[in-house]
Length: 331
Image (cartoon, rainbow, N blue to C red; front, side, top):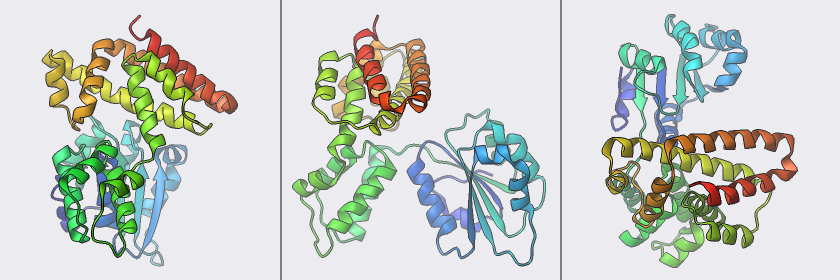
């Protein structure tokens, strides 16, 4: 059974024991779990990762099917679910489950996904898709948050916060809470205060560096690397930032291959691309083909494995790749 993400109150009405929450909007999924499952829940919360279940399926199934009279209600959260879990989920949903709610959490699932099809078509199962927010929906979230908390803020400053959060609901929620804590006993927030509070400069440098690399701006890439202090922990964050940008670029190129027009593709892409980023995204799309993007993704995955073998050299390895990519992407 499908429940729309804007009708989440229907979750409370559902008698289902098994739920699938999928999609790229991690912030919205976390909100849904917190507000519609965990809020006011007094029982035990058990968390699993898919890999843990694949390593010990029997233990997981025993946890789900245990009918002990001495056990309280349970909520079981299973993260990072992929198609590898299908047979286990199928086995689970074929039997009666008592005093438990099992929530499977996944990233984006294609229509042909067996897990998605199972949850969409079976009446006793619940499936909710959480797609990325657009700028309008994020603006509404921020506006309502500040209004509810009696904080006076201009439309310009709300847009500034959204820009700093890169269209991510989870980041937005974190930054709004930061502002709320700062604004204790105040009822107004200024632009200067927002600039001090929201998003560290380091976080911006990660994406700025990757964007410039993918746009082939070799000079500015070198400049950022030379003028910022990066530590060893930054290598992993840089790889994840790189993969995040490449994932977006893959989606953009796929749409462009259908539409044929780069500007139109960027204008209508979801989640919306901020106006100030459109020029650099257009340059990236002009330089990169899908084939080259997939090759770079493989290189990054291989590099992450090298980090684990030689952590001390991790920054050198990622910066070498970034510098060389900014020179050679079009060759």
